[in-house]
Length: 232
Image 1 (cartoon, rainbow, N blue to C red):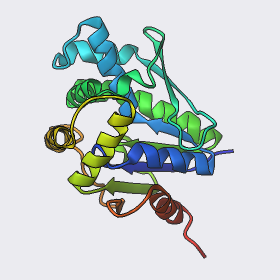
Image 2 (cartoon, helix red, strand yellow; image 1 turned 90 degrees about the vertical axis):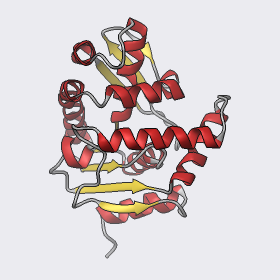
Image 3 (tube, rainbow, N blue to C red; image 1 turned 120 degrees about the vertical axis):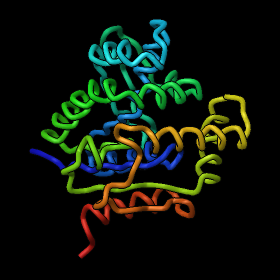
């Protein structure tokens, strides 16, 4: 039995992870959090003393990485992220810090890194689709990784809204900072992600645009599910 492939792209803080998690749980599909893969690489590079700007070394690490996503039963809870190779590590929370977010954005700009991780992402999705379906979220799912996906969505929100959401998320984890600092960080990531030479952040021409600035999670999830299976 196979399932659908649903891709959700968008900038930092747009709510992709939360919404994608909810959609996957709702339809019983696997969640492919591609951002977590880049975060895992940034974490591993830091552990190995590899600069986030060293493309060749990073690509070498990327070719060694094996990631396992383990869903949790609690509704809305973030799935576990397990690094299987080249070392075993539980990364669910440690890759969600501002420093690793910055690292993920920097390592993702390297063409060799993106090339090395492309096959990993597609392989994970293929296994999931063959079982029950896959919800893939990231920056270039609909444009590069899965350009032929039947269900594409681009989730965005005002920068102020995204900064407020990210600040609340970080505050809940006990991390320090201000809304202004978070907004400045998001602005830097927006610029880096949208201006990189390879796979820049962009909405696929056939992706449904959803501005979530004035919507709650359930409303966004409902719009996506209606797009996948339009009401009669």
